Each structure stands twice: as structure tokens, then as C-alpha cells.
Image 1: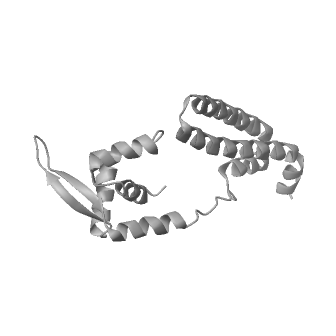
Image 2: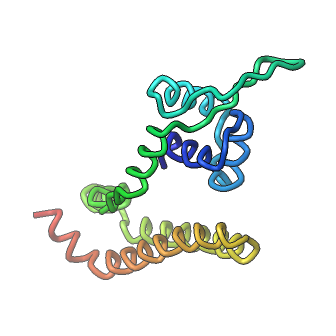
Image 3: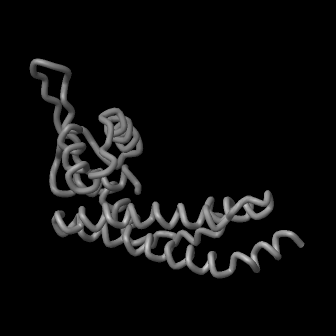
Length: 174
């Protein structure tokens, strides 16, 4: 995820302080990985330097000065371009799991055990996500569905790999 573009998009609804941006980000996107304040302020500094945001006001109170940021026209254009650019699908052509299976076979270890352990871990993760989806709002349900579909595809691959393990063993030892 592009933190900078996400913060820019949040600014399109109006100027905000860094604290407000962090809170909005965490509420909408950061359920599992909230932003650190330092990450927000370093990103805002970079966006300011690049002319994508401007300081809309500075407030001083009992603590440090609080800058209020506003998105510029260049920032809006940048967000529009980012949103219109498709994300590159992740083909997983060099997955760690595949590497573990081949190494297990090359070193005469039980690759089926690795597949079984991974299958159990995927199922555990799916149970957690399904529970979260059941309790969550629409946004949480959609993000959980995305993760669940990927885990289901992984499970299909695990089953396929298990079914082809003897052929793979023969292939890696030739």
C-alpha cells in the first residue's frame, strides 16, 4: 500500500493535522498495522517537499506546533493517476513454501509434513479471518474476503503439491 497516496486521498475531504490523518488511516486501513506517528510526519514532510501538500495553518497550544496540511492540485492529480494505475498481480513464482518443499526433498526430509503443517496454519488463519469477518463492518468483511480467497488458493496449491509430491521428488533428484 502506498502510504503517501493514501494520506493524500484522505486529505481530499479537507485539511487535517498529522494526528487526524493517522487516526483516519488507522480507522480505515490500519486495523492490523497502524501507522507510527513518525511515519506520518516523515511522509507528510516528503509530500510537502514534492509540492503535493501545503501547510494550511499552524496552531500552537500547550505542546509543539501542529501543522494542518491541505492537498494541492498536483496532489489531487497524483492521487488520480495512482488510482487509475492497476496494481501488478503477484504471481508468487518464487514462493518460500515451494523452496521449502524442494529443499526438503533434496535433503531427504519429509516434504509431506511441511505441507501438512502449512495446511494446518492456513486453516487456523482462515478460522481467525472468518471470525473477524463475522464480527466486522463492511470494510472489514471485504478485506477479510480478500485474504480468505488468497488462503483458499494457497490451500488448493497445497493439495496439488501433495498429490504431485512423488513426481516432484523424482524431478528434483534427476
